[in-house]
Structure formats: structure tokens, C-alpha cells
Length: 199
Image (tube, rainbow, N blue to C red):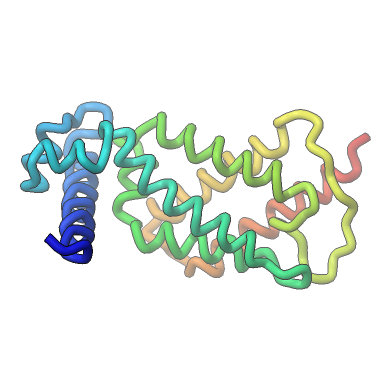
């Protein structure tokens, strides 16, 4: 089999498994679903599943890694004068692309493990890049560099972002990715501004 045919088969398997994952979370909840049900629903063999993933957590983790790499790439490509909402627009566009999946994972039948994982990843990102306000400042604002001596601020920001995503999806995306990203950035910016007054 050629390399491209092999890649095509892998992508097809991953797509079928993701679709089955969403359906099963919506029906039964993430915690209750089994690999057997997942492979049966996706009409792929268990062997095909285990060639790609260790378990159902690994499946979800790989999907989330795509979201985080989209976000990190956007942060990395940001020029010094660029407006940070652009970073979050990219992120919310990814969420919108996999709307059903994220709504299933973050909703009441979803995975508390996934919610925690998402919060931790976003908190790490805020801690790493937020200190220079790269993630939340207006193009003209001249704000001081923050140091997060404890984890409170990154944790608050990441929790707010996860809740904003969940709300946005559960409401049927009442605003565009750009609008929700801009709102979140303004809220985070206001929080950072307040934190900069702490001693």
C-alpha cells in the first residue's frame, strides 16, 4: 500500500471514530462508553483503534492537542504590534469547526477529566504568554509586565475561557468566533489590568 493510501485510511479511521465518539457521548455520556461500542459504532476494528490510540482518553487528548497547537501556532506567529484577539479568534474557529465534539465533551454528559485538562493547558498558556500581556492587551495599551507569583490569575482566566466556550456552544453559538474571542480578550485584559495594581 502506498504512503498516501495508508494516510488516507488512517484519516478515515480517525474521522469515523471521532463521529462515533460524539454520538456516544450525546447518548450515554463519556464515562460510560467503551472501546467496543466505539469501534462497533464507527465500524472499524479494535486493532485499527489501538493502532491510533491507547484508549478513549488518548483519542480525546489527540483532538485537544490539535486545538492547542492551533492556538500555540497563532501565539507564535503574533508580531509585536498585533492584536491578541486574533489568537483567540483562531482558537474559537477551531472550537466551532468541532462544535458537536466540544459541546459533547464540555457538557453535562461530557468528561470532567477533559474539562480539567483544557483548564490546565489554557492556564499554562496564560502563565507562559500572558505575563507580557501578549494574550490580552489592546494594540495601544502600555501595560506593565505581570508576574504570576501564584496560580490564581492563570486559573481564573482558564476557567473563564472554558466556561465561555461551554456557554457559547450550549447557546448555539449566538455570536461569531471573532465576537466571542473579542469579548473574552476584553474580560481578560480587564482582569490583568486589575492584577497589575496588586502589590
